[in-house]
Length: 75
View: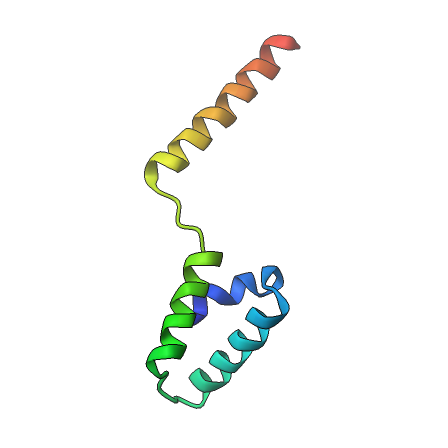
């Protein structure tokens, strides 16, 4: 989870960023997370890391290709 969240640090608020930096330090030192910290980390993961389903990706590609076809017809 920590590796996934590293890409989203710039999108985090001040408090979340502080907490995440503490989680990273604990991970670096190989310390175990207590239950409250693990729960908070899981909540941050759900909030920031968006998972795309195969259907979402296919819909996005279909929308993109439809836009390309529309542009070609207009030329």
